[in-house]
Picture 1: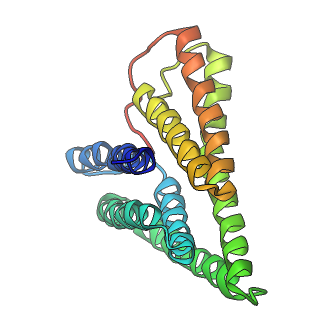
Picture 2 (picture 1 turned 30 degrees about the vertical axis):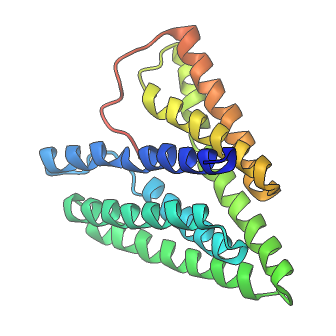
Length: 216
């Protein structure tokens, strides 16, 4: 096995663990018979992100991107279904799911077909769209980071999730470098930095009890 194949499988394994982290949240839903204060948005955003990367991977003929994001999309759909079963406000959840489906389909259609007069143009449009969504996903914990600094406590953060985010970002950045794909490199470089910032907060303020619920 050459180094690229090794990094490719390492990316798949780390991202697999990241996607599976939602199981703990779903177990809490089942145990409590409620979703509590956990929002549905992170599940929806991650599902859209996975769908976009599947389309990008298809255009680039990159089996690594297709494989792991297909798995991730299927898992997110399971998480969303479990959320819908246990949420107290199904009407609100249904509206958010329909809105996310519309946004996802619109992004896929625009990025792949609108102003895409060639395969190269479609790849650029889809890659750019994936980058925007990926940056938004990685940047979502920033509000929590601000809370940690203000309260000087990491209770609202998950150390394992922060570690997984950092490892995943670093691994995909390396993969993007090896295959020469800036659309994989750029957002994951940012993800690695943001994950590293979270780990520095744990080093600064120490480990506290894990949050009672995780968005993913």
